[in-house]
Image (cartoon, rainbow, N blue to C red; front, side):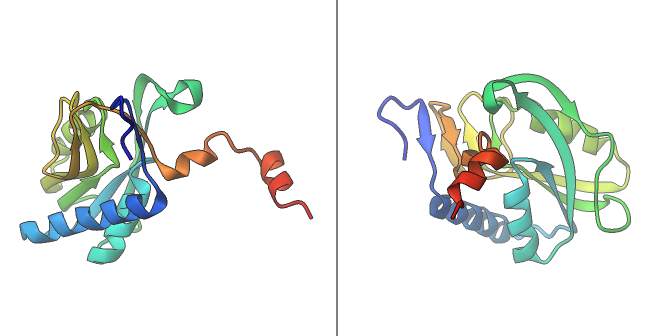
Length: 173
């Protein structure tokens, strides 16, 4: 649900999963065949996992981080992992790069540039759920464009501030 001021988008678990399924359909309907999925941790892990299951393709993970300050709401320096984790072999062939959103576009652009320099990757396409209006990068596949570039409150964010002691209180008998 987008707030009246256009500055916040609140997404329920059901909406979140429907968006991932719609993203899968966009990729499938394009007719593009790919060999592997690379998701960006953390935001792309859930969409990457679901797409990996739907398309029955191996899932690789690359850790990136730029939103660390103020409970993950302020973007800082972009850090890209040196290594990519995958079940076997190397990242190669036709790769679908998956994240949750194209916010500023900085992370996706940096990862795409790095991956395009890898000779084993023959083709690379990107897929996200949301593209913000301020993004400098537009993926090949996306579900929704957000012209007002709202802050997206995703359902799993409830865990960002939850600590074990608070969780223990929740389940205390």
